[in-house]
Length: 218
Image (cartoon, rainbow, N blue to C red; front, side, top):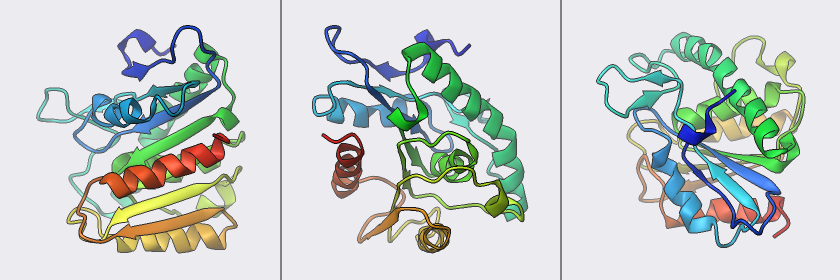
C-alpha cells in the first residue's frame, strides 16, 4: 500500500466528504510538490476534491528531490516506450491504492500530467479497464507502439495543452496526439498557446479548471 503520509496532498475541509480526486503527474526532474501548487489555486472552487501529487518512482541521477517516471537521456521512440512500460505498474498500483484509501472510483478521478507525466497518462490510462473521469495532458506526447490501438480498453475526455514555443517537446507532438486520439474516437480537444515555452501559464490553468469543472459538474 502506498504510504499516503509521504505523498503531497491537499484534503477538503474536515466537514466535507471526498467525492473526487485530481492526480498530478509531474515532469522529468521534478517531484510531487511541483504541480501541487495548482491544487492550492483550485481547492476553493473544488471543495469536495482531493489533490494529490505522487513522486515518480525513480530518482534522477543527480540526486536531491528530483524524480523521473523514466530515463530521458534519449528521446528515441523505442527508449521512451521502454521507459513507459517500466513505469506503468507503479502508476497503476498508485491508482488502485488511491481508490482504496479514499473510497473512490475510477470515474471520480481526473489526471493532470505535465511533460513526462502527460506521456504516462496518455499511454497508460486508456489501457485500464475502468474509465477515469478525464485527462489533462500538458506539454507531452502520445507514444504508440504496434499494440497500442489493440490495448485500448477505455475512452474518456482528454484535453491537450502545449506552448507553441516549447523548446523541450515540440508542440507538433501534441497536434499529432490530438489527431490520433480523435481518429480513435476519444473526446479530445487541443489548445496551442502562443508565446509559451515548456510550461503552464494562466491561460493553461483556466483551460484546465474549465475542463475539471465540466467533468465534475461544478
